Length: 84
Image 1 (cartoon, rainbow, N blue to C red):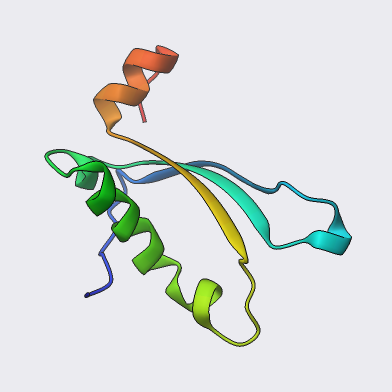
Image 2: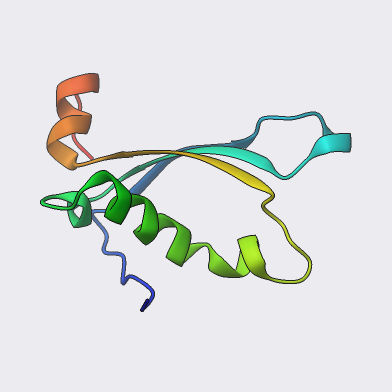
């Protein structure tokens, strides 16, 4: 799969280690992008995993586990009341 080309309308809302440092590499991320419009949930996740492939599968492996939430700009605006 080709890596996605992200535009300025893509926004990573939060990313953080969800485990203590000794068990690091577990992250949660929320990504808002117009690229998710008309894409099913699996394809949305594939776009995110593709963008992070080096960190997930590279050496050293930076990301061990990743919890992903994907939203379109319209979904983000509906949930937060603000635009991307």
